[in-house]
Length: 339
Image 1 (tube, rainbow, N blue to C red):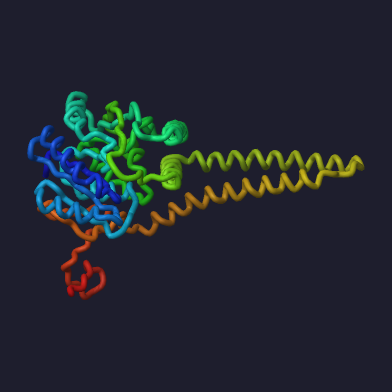
Image 2 (image 1 turned 45 degrees about the horizontal axis):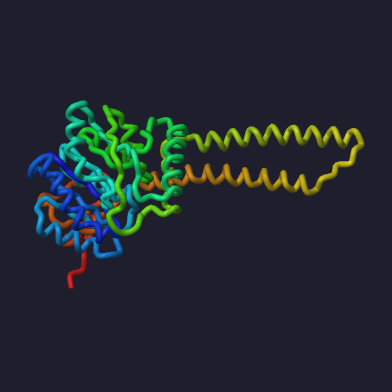
């Protein structure tokens, strides 16, 4: 068991990895001396990230490199690193170095001084981001705060320091669609903010384009709030009341002998009602789809290979393949052909 683990999910980060390793090593040594580990998780990168990670692990006994079998997504790659790390205290940080590793000693001091289980970074400023990105992030956090039943901190990402007992509580939550910052808020314990200025990405491009941001936001809303379903039911009630009023008006017009005109307006009402119905069905389908995925109880991630790190790791939420296992019966570890 190490004093400190630093967990970093990586996807196509070959340009950042050397500087990342250097700065993480310096920060860890300044904070806890030599009793630390760095866990780099390769999330199906298509560049040379894994080759660089393997090389770094061969030269550094403090480094554990984990290669997932495919691209599982940021939150599941982070879950794999958290599941396989062994530290008493765990730092979560992204590979782009927008969150400065040099803040680690100050975050540890805050955790000790306030007897906290979680110290989460709160962004005072966001360098290198467009006005659109800042505006959408600002709106997303506030919408999420209003819609969810859990008090999720504003302007806080995954950059945080956690105690082992907080991490163990997090790893007891096996759901597939993971929104880790919300899950950490849900577990409770004492959690304190740590304000900092977010830097510009060191190199490369963002791994969260607009489409992924929208998907991530929808996962957060549906994973921690029933507000979309409540909205759908409220809209349905409103349309039902409107339909009853419309029926009463049509009956009155027919009984009074007035001709009913307005084909265009009638068709408009039909189209609007149909669109709202499809929207409600889509929301219900999203929640039903989540239930379907959870019912399959698949491992959250699959590790193809591991480099460095010394002792074997026992996963709780995933599957670590053994490339040399010889299994001739169902349920074994499987075999890998040797050329």
